Length: 262
Image 1 (cartoon, rainbow, N blue to C red):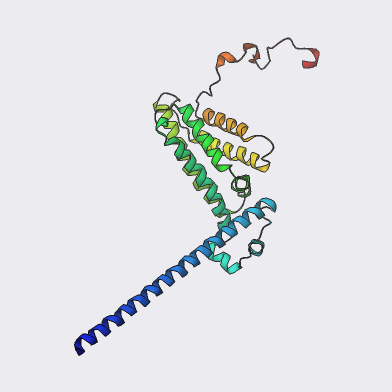
Image 2: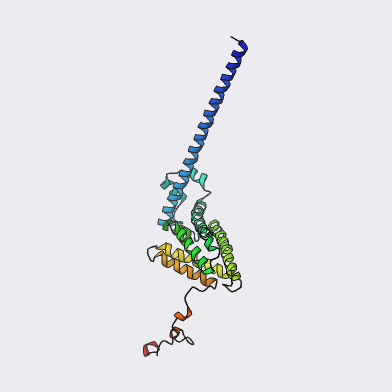
């Protein structure tokens, strides 16, 4: 036997075993990291789900971090590994709904057919898509439109950021309508602020009791508000309005006043 060759074979075999061991160690570490990440993701989802339940049943002001942790079976230390505080948890819940609404509006407008569509069709489509997205889970809707009100400075700053994004988005639609001759050229900034406020309040009104009236009725009302804010006809012809129903000098002209009506 060749001593040199035997020594080389031994060294090669030792190196192979070392590489195999390192590979197994790397795989084990990767599996452990993945398992740890999965556990953390599950813990975060559990906190979000628990907070959603408590915020919508007890209300945000009456729900403490301690109660959230106890109900979710998560330590307070683990809670702070996920969120800076209770406001950060509420912001995360609001952000999920807000992002879903924006993505739905952008998706519907990305349809090739919408490129040449008129302002009325575009506003109607994006408004209905937005509403469908933000109301798919009524409990999430309540948190995003009701529980966030007065929840603290950080939450309000987060809401203002989303209002700013929507203001820019709707301003773009207004400019497009003006360029196409479908809306009067003017400053729509205040109208859009009012529109966003109206939308938030109308959705909040529905979220407080989702059984009070159908979502389709809410969608129709939001579309009317959006079109009116941009000065776009809603589709109701003036010819369809009876002339005797239009007040003259503040007095209805539908018929003679009776003694009871005087």
